[in-house]
Structure formats: C-alpha cells, structure tokens
Image (cartoon, rainbow, N blue to C red):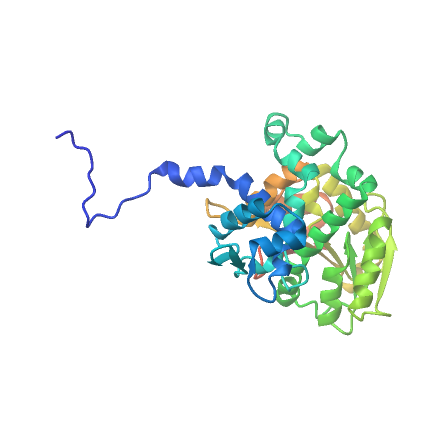
Length: 351
C-alpha cells in the first residue's frame, strides 16, 4: 500500500486547500449577483412575503429563467432562500438590499457592480505596477473629476457614501459623545448623515456642513428632514483652498483616506488655519477613519485600503501613520477612540 490517505466512515474529510481559494476566486461573480439584485430592487418586492421567480420576473420585465438562476445562486450563499421550488424569500443577509430599511446597503451594492466603478477594480494590476489609481488610467481622469460631469454616477456614489456614514454615525456619536461641543464643522460632510446624528444627540450644538456646491442641496434636504432647522449652516467650497472658521470641533470623516499624504496634509493644515482664533476655547480636530491594526486578523479597513489605491490614490493608515501626518500639519494626536463600527475617532489638538 502506497500510504495514500483513505478516509474511513468515522474520519471527517477535510476540504482540500484549493476549495477555499476556488470560492474566493469567484468573488467577482458574487459582487455582480448582488449588484443585479440590488439594481432590480428584488428585495423590496419580497418585503411582504416570498415570491415566485416568474412573478418577480414579470414585475421586473426580465428573463424568467435567468432571474431564477441568479436567485438560486444567491440563495446558495445565504442571500435569499428558496423556500419552495422557484419561490424565494428574504433572509437576514438579504434585508440590507431593501431601499429604505435601517442599515440599507442597496446603494453600495449598486456602486460596486457599476461598469464605471467595476472597470477600475478590474485593473488593480496597473495600480500595483505603478502605485497610481487604476480609475485614472481607465477613465483618463480622477474619480472626483469624473463625478463632476457624470450625474448618475455621482448620485450612486453619494448614496453609497450616505450608506457608509449611516453605518458609522451612531457608533461614532455614542463612543465620542460630543458633549462639550458647541459648534461642529463637518468638513466634507456629504449629505449630512453624521451632522444630523450629532445634532440629534446634542440639542445644545449647532453645526456647519462644508462640502462642494453639487453636494450641498442633498445635505440641506437631509438636515431639514431630520428637523435640524435653525441649528445648521451649509457652506459650499473647496477644502484644498480654505475651511470655514468659528468651530470648536472640526470633523473629517472618510476624507483623509481619500488622499495621499501631501494632499491630506493640505486639508489638515487648512483645518489648523481655520481653528486659529478658537484655540483658547480648546478647539479639537476629529479624524474619523478605519485605523489599520497590526497583525493578520481580518479588518474591513484592509480591503477599503485597496479600494483607495484603485480609485483615489489614497490609503487607510495605521495609528503611527496618522500621528505622523497630524504632526506634519501642526497637530498633536491626543487619543484614538474605538467605536462599535470599524471606524475610530482620532482626536488631535493644534500645537
């Protein structure tokens, strides 16, 4: 006998090492499956109970057999469940694909499968060879320049950003508190999800939301819907040029990671300049980002870091890298406050 291992009935068989890798290699297919379900709005059609795939196909005006095969594949990884032959129901993992539920990830699922975004992700090798964002290589311009003239893409991107901030906002407010803050300046605050969460938790606080002109209209709608009338001001501008003065707390959430060190330092220095006349009041800077931990443990920021490499040329950073960046911009790091989400609050003060 040659020494080949033969499993007995009592010996559990281990899957060969290639099995796990084989599944991971199909990750691009999973992204597209989820993207299709999100784009079509399949989960919203199941909110009142299971639906047959043919019924769904008729409502969505798509090919019945093709839709069935997509739903069957998704059910095999826990997104939807084929309760009866051809009849599919929501699962816990499918719920976030609904449009308006708390914790919705529908916009993010659409973004990651959109051709304009997808093509950049498919050119990671260019970024590895050059250190430059694949997005610029594929499209001939930067992500933010592209979004300036691609209204549909910008809408999807902004909805995705709102999704991501919504995942973190309550965790950030709960962990940091903002109890001593009287006037918060949310730099690059997008559609106002974090601003709204701060104002909701701190009724004594007012806020300035600062972002590009194209974003401000969405921010006003969001803050008005949150009932924050009279407690916020929206200001349009470019944080590479200047940042509004008058805040005792300046917040940068998911802004610094968009940029390589030189450009990030410009933004931070502009914050330092805006804080100059409130130093006596104990002005603080809060950088809200995914701080990369040491070691090999899974951490969402490690994959977000690759997204930054691909689409903006930015990066996620370690605690030491953030300390170095802040020091270069005229700040001292005072503490890092972890939250129940992957984001941490990096607190710094001017020096």
